[in-house]
Figure (tube, rainbow, N blue to C red):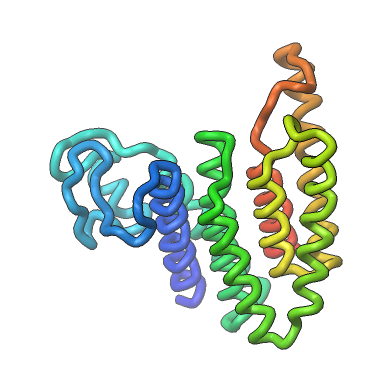
Length: 233
């Protein structure tokens, strides 16, 4: 039952990530009620149960029948699985709750970066605010700030040297996520993200014969590094 609770909570975090990413990219208020993107009909609670509503309605809007993007069920499943894994590691408590919060913002960043190659300030600000609040509650603000510096400064340097190679959203998200892990955890997360991005770039070049200057989103690799550190290590 504990794992079921954790998975349901993670599904809700994934649902929030999907809604937040959609609204921020389109300049909509983050807190407005959920509506169908096609017909704008207000969605009820029964339409927003993570995973189950999508399956029951066969991926369509109850009111107009239009198809719902599969990205919503994908991010809800990801959120549920990750939250359950984190529960196995941390058990109930502040650490698991902190991971759940970080997970929701990182998943939102992945969605926006994949869709538009941008990570909105609204996601970075919310991540940073939650990280600072957690650090204050744990009386570990210096350690959190060190984590932000370890994660953010290398990307900031790269962005200043190569503005076309690193976006400001990546820098802000890395620094904000670093608040959650501290300097050592942030360093490992950035190493994982960098290695993953380099390997992906090499693979793309080998398969598609593209040049290194071709842009691809770094946000998913950042999220992967931080989530891996939060769940596995």
